[in-house]
Length: 207
Ligand SMILES: Nc1nc2c(ncn2[C@@H]2O[C@H](COP(=O)(O)OP(=O)(O)O)[C@@H](O)[C@H]2O)c(=O)[nH]1
Ligand SMILES: [Mg+2]
Picture 1 (cartoon, rainbow, N blue to C red):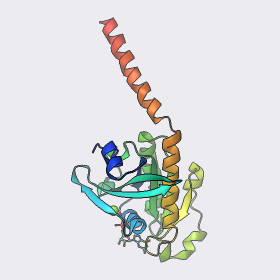
Picture 2: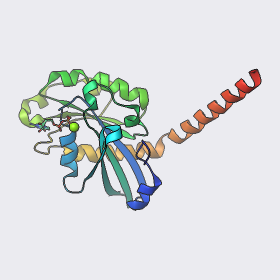
Picture 3: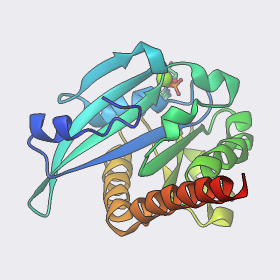
Picture 4: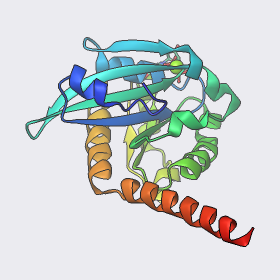
């Protein structure tokens, strides 16, 4: 498997028509892993990839008659350094960005995560998730303006009692799919290769 987790072998193995990669970002202990586990409860097959220090969950679902294989990528501690390895972002189609309503600092750090995300994936859909609302329902009255300012969808959730968890993940899969279908990723790659070729030619002529 390549670093993007996308391979035709996988599509065959899971008999899937399409494959998307969804990543999770946010500070340590905001509940990223719990959220994934909550969504995946029975059907998940975690795979620890030690080289990349992450856990990969494979999930299949049917959307409009098509089998979609979703690779959910979860961190394995690297987020402590407030930065992820580029391979984590590589070919991701959507991002779920999580903070903990009980710890203000995790909300304040969202712009750091968002900036890094946009350096690698300028266009992918990003969903902002306020987790642990079970601890204090009053927080849902509060105004967390980061998502609104950036024009991103926002959800109050609880991995502990399950509030909105399925909704967030289903929305993320839908957004990842429509991004993949409509994006210019493929053309971007072609253009980049062309640019490299042109550069090589220029160099060849100038020497
Ligand atoms: N009360 C409450 N605790 C949660 C919730 N989600 C996660 N936790 C707790 O927060 C801690 C960190 O969760 P974890 O999923 O490991 O966070 P990660 O580091 O972001 O992956 C654990 O002790 C969880 O039990 C939630 O929705 N409500
Ligand atoms: Mg975790």
